[in-house]
Amino acid sequence: MRVTVRRASTDDAAVLAGLRFRWLTESGGRGELDEGPFIEAFSAWVRDHVATHVPFLAEVDGDAVGMAWLMVAD
View 1: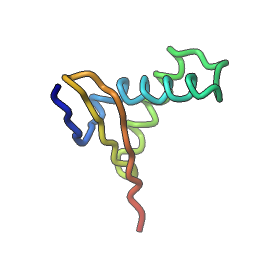
View 2 (view 1 turned 45 degrees about the horizontal axis):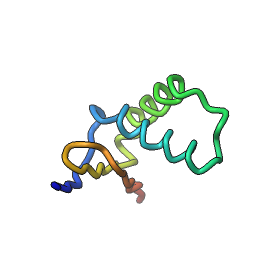
View 3 (view 1 turned 135 degrees about the horizontal axis):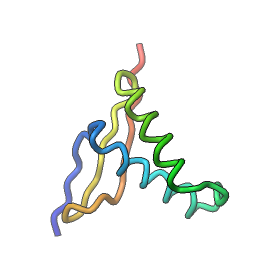
View 4 (view 1 turned 90 degrees about the vertical axis):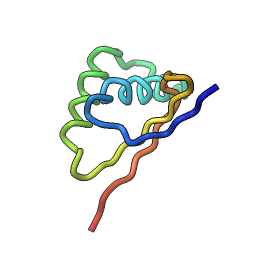
């Protein structure tokens, strides 16, 4: 098993959005969300906030399993 954690890029926006959607729906907080529109909107948010939010992506054998975010502040 190979575990990696790397800085994500805007190319990973849909993967990050999928992880976020999964967390929201599995925690029971947002069962009414539609996956397609959520992925699209969250991916756009990722691209729009690259100057202030730095995403990291955790992978096991190439499969996304987690994420973390750093907010850049003055």
